[in-house]
Image (tube, rainbow, N blue to C red; front, side, top):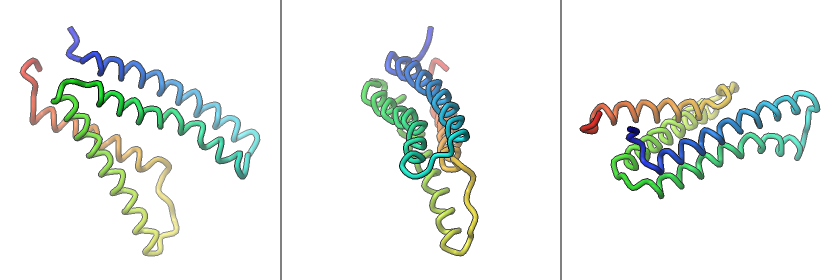
Length: 136
C-alpha cells in the first residue's frame, strides 16, 4: 500500500514525464546550438526551449499544492519550496555582492538551481525526522 495521495501520484507521474521531455529538449537544443551557432533572437529562442519544461514543473507544483488535501504533506512541500527559494536567493545575492566588490568571474551554470534542490532536500529530510508520521 502506498502512502502517497492521489494528488502526489498524479504530480509525480506528470513531473517525471516533463523532466524526461526536458532532457530530450535540452539535448536536442544543445546539439543544434553547437552545430548552427545562433545569435540574436535565435539564441534567445534556443535558450527558451529547455526552459519551458522547467517552467511547466513550477506550474505542476502549484497545481499539486492546490489538489493536495493532506495539510501535513502540503506544509512539507511549502517548507521545502521556501528553503529552496531562500537558498537560491542567497546564492544569487552572494554572487551579486562579489560582482559589486570587483569580482569578474561568474558562478557555475545553474548554481542557484543546485542550491535550491540541495536546500529543499535537506529541508524535507530534517522536517520528516522532526515530524515522523505514525505509519513510518
